[in-house]
Length: 241
Image 1 (cartoon, rainbow, N blue to C red):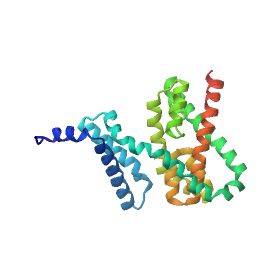
Image 2 (cartoon, rainbow, N blue to C red; image 1 turned 180 degrees about the horizontal axis):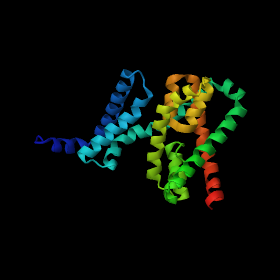
Image 3 (cartoon, one colour; image 1 turned 60 degrees about the vertical axis):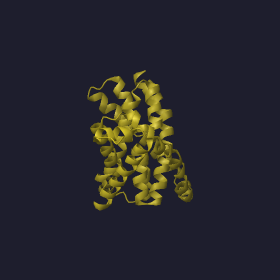
């Protein structure tokens, strides 16, 4: 029987996981189109536009996130291979990375500590609860690692995931203009800053600018996740333990 209303049509289509996958791809393509039409303005980040479109669709249709994720999990699965693929530009820039080893190590250590300490300090100064402070602390780390750290320290992994995404979008949008304002032209330094501060989304933005920047951003993203996973629990216990 042919559905007699748009609601019935949606319920019928929502039963297929391919609908969520299709909506995700279309939303990102719309975001990418607007991004290109705006001259690649960082304020119109395609990920941000796609997220807003999908959230709007789920709210209007009353679709739960669990139902949506049944189809979107196929895109989620590809995050693994996409992250591994970052090793390709990294390998191509291996010579430059070896020459800058000491500087990279110092920058990552300071960047990791600054990202966590500033988040904790600001949240604490604004009167946030301990649970919220823990949740915001690993905001500059890629989502799976950040959620694991948050859960281990007693935070809210779901809140952490939202904050991680916001951090990535804001970093990708405002990072390049800020680096331009500070007159930082070295692509190695720019990539390292983007990867440390705004993880995968910042790394994707760096790759759009330069392969060198993308390689250093990918390196920073991975090492910052490792450094934060090791240092943040120690910092938390030292300060609040």
